[in-house]
Length: 105
Image 1 (spheres, one colour):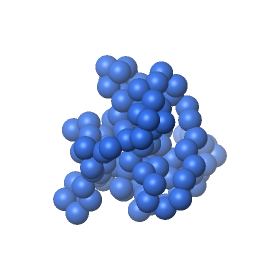
Image 2: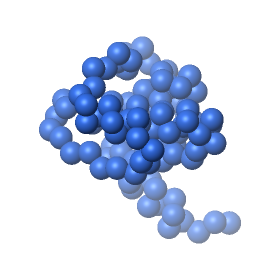
Image 3: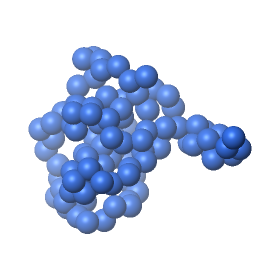
C-alpha cells in the first residue's frame, strides 16, 4: 500500500544540463543512464517516465525497476508528487521475476 511521506521531496525545479534536457524532451522511450552517486539518475528517470505518461495522455504503461524496496518507495513517492497519482508500476527486479515465474491460477 502506498502512503505519501513528506520526508522525501521531489525537486520540481531541477536545473538539467543540455544532455538531460534533450533526453527528457525526446520521443525515445527506452534509455540507460550511467552516473555516480548524486548525479541525478533517479530524478532523471522519474521525470522522463512522467513526461512519457503525460504525453500519452495517461495511456502509457510504464514499468520502473529498482534494486531495493527502499528505492521502490522513493520512486512511488516521487511519481505521486509529479503526477498526483501513482500510474507507474514500480517494483524490484526480484519481485518482477517472481511474478513472472509464479503460475497463474
